[in-house]
Amino acid sequence: MKIEVKKNCAYSLIVPTSMGVRITPLNGQPVHCSDTFTMQATSAETNVASVSSYLGLPVKVLTTFVKDSPVARFIKDNLASRHMSYEGIEVEQGGPWGYRHQFNIADSGYGSRGPRVHNDRAGEVGRTLNVKDFDLDRIFGKEGVQMLHLSGLVAALSPETSNFCLELARFAKKYGTKISFDLNFRATFWKGREKELRNIFTEIANISDVLVGNEEDFQLCLGIEGPEAGGKDIAAKIDSFKGMINNVKKAFPDTSVYATTLRQVISTNEHMWGAIMLEGKNWHVVEPREIHVLDRIGGGDGFVGGMLYAILKGWEPEKWIQFGWACGALATTLLTDYAQPADEEQVWSIWKGNARVKR
Image (tube, rainbow, N blue to C red; front, side, top):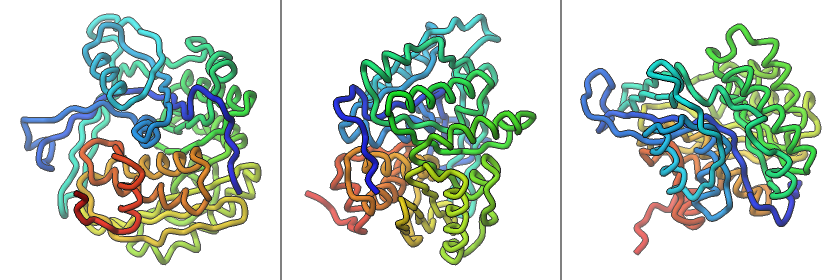
């Protein structure tokens, strides 16, 4: 089943997001043992979009910034270096206790010591994202967008961002833009808002063309029965994952593509990595294969980014999951949260297991 995207659009992919920065100790050390850190601009949604932007497709980020903030300037320069355009209002900081961009303080882990991520999101300016700050008729109608990618992280940040994502999905549907929705459940975001968010996520899922989530996402966001999370032998659970996706399809029959990644952690730096995708009535399965991991954060986003790129390029469906799997594997070899493919050939070499030197 091909997904036919609109032609002659200004943007191949648009992502709404709340941008922040990640600080990480050097050399895989724990946070509490370190005094030297690297800093990078990050968000799950721009992680997804990076595959398309590095491979030459026009990408736009919808966000908001803290006015006159050096961190905001750092983020803008980073987005420009990733070949992404951006649009968003400038919000006054409002003093030392006002708005700021989120901080993620991340220990990448090493060997038998697992990663730990501490999210510091107090005063996050992205929680103010509002449809009134964007001309959606211009963006989706006059300029044109082939695909909108939404994340449950942004959709659950605040009542304002929930409505923002819902309105974006409605505008996308109105103008014939395809919609991708990665559920990305976070328990701390949902606390006290379960009924409200279940209704919003269900409406977005009902009009989405691509639905992505792991076993927890589908169960906790949409109430779809699935396998227990975790486990030692992920390959043995493929049939149960297929059963879960079949349940998702019954609940959301108008969606074209359903996908989930498969990850079994052997150690911090060694994973079994696979994926399942259902397009139409056709199953595509990548049996879990061993990958070596420098930093796992962003691997799932890389998978989604690669899959969406393949869809936007109009490739055959069997290549969607293959390119997605390889982009996810690529992301885990990098210290950034996002994949930065040099070209399509590099990604296909990862898929083929060819790590030989290229001169």
